[in-house]
Image: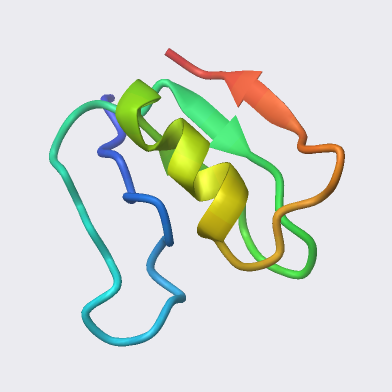
Length: 64
C-alpha cells in the first residue's frame, strides 16, 4: 500500500494548510503529541521547518 504525502503541515494544521501533493511518501517525521508526518522528498525540508510538533533533533525514518 502506498501512502500519499501529507505535505509540509499534515492534516492537523489550520484549514487549507494541508498540501496533499499526491506523490508517494518516502519519509516519516516523528512529532511530539501528534502522529508521524509522512512526506515525499520535496516536502521533507519544509516539514522539518514548519510542521507542528516536530522533535529536535528531528527523527526521520525512510518508509518507502
